[in-house]
Image (tube, rainbow, N blue to C red; front, side, top):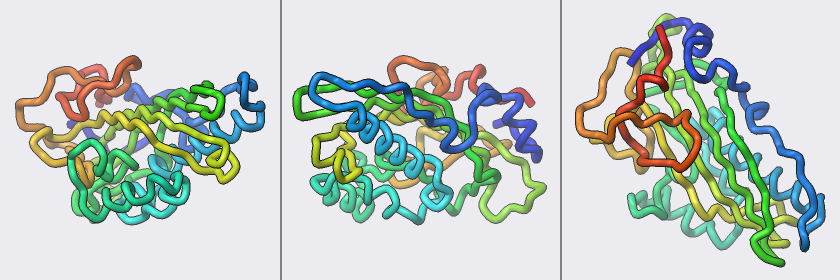
Length: 241
């Protein structure tokens, strides 16, 4: 995996060069009322979805594997048991993986070299029925990482996560600023497909290469349907250093 000690140079020579930093990279779209929901209700749904994305994908305390409450408080109460079980007993069953709820790295392996994560993507709101709003979010996050405990001169590498999240809101959710997370697709790399990514993402860092055997040519910068969590990182997705 290409790396350099100069984080800014790494970003400038990657596909994330034009991405915004932090919450600025998750702007709210222009919104309008639907048949059964007011403009302010649509804005409430979009704002809650944005808050979830920011807290679960950009908060350094969450990313480093410790904090979960900041994400948990945004969930509809009906999902709290599922959320809690995911962290108490992580399982790769499609319902109880911590990395489906939020982005977090194995703290024994990697740490943030830059707290200002780059991000780009889209948010869209639509009425599902007369009592439900849905928000679809599709964002690519780019993290600058270095080995845990390394000094500032250590080589930094970029790690990319693409998340497609589908949220559902009833009127109670809108009033209480909470959401139901109904779908979470995640693509991430570079990481070794042989390693378990259920509990933490375990990035490959500068100078490391993955074992063979993953799907070829995964590009988390590409838009369209999300594919497997893990695969060989496409050349086009790597920084030129």
